[in-house]
Image (cartoon, rainbow, N blue to C red; front, side, top):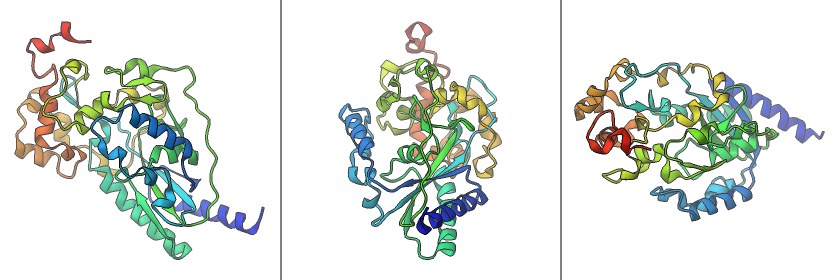
Length: 326
């Protein structure tokens, strides 16, 4: 091993210590190189129209697959994970449901702040480290980098999985010109399991490792901007009004998920206590207060109420009768 290799390993180990000290769940490193295989997969996915109204997925294609297009001279991609799993649940089992990731404050803001601290600390220890950090808000394929770095494997539901901690975690990426020792990929451990595929009520997982985003409940409740959700999906949302956790909830690996320790992700008591009737009668002022600083603000009051009114537990007219459901 050369002196440059030894230096790269020493830096990598120190970087992982820094990440842990800031509360990140894991930190792995990949070599900054063009994602040729993933580029072909993305092109095919877009060609099938699986992105629906997510037109932004077609933009900045080269930046999505080439880290040097985002950070000239990039040598390493540092991938970090942040746990958000919680044992907390909404108390009314008949109430419209919100994905666990949106229980607390907007993760973009929480993790970006932590990522900035991480980058600042790298500069204080290693000098003028050029780089850019990303948290699910730029043309970066975070899941592809998580796989390349060995942080986990991409499951049949298209989420990143680990044997130790499941899949309930956010990803952050720092592309840097720092020369580091990359970690190796990990093996896929999905095996013959099809729990996620079998459990998806809208048949969004069209094949193992292939998701039609335009059929996903998260897409309909967050990304779709139409005033009306297609009638084809009436009675098939399993009461989800913002996001969906079904494919993760049924995944056997998530039995290893443990309660997060990030106070910012804790839900308000009012959120967990709301009944189905409370959601039906939710007013704009209450929405603004309840979701102050939350990712749910992304859909706005009208968007959330559109989702609520689409659910059979709220409106029991004949369109939502069990006989009409899948």
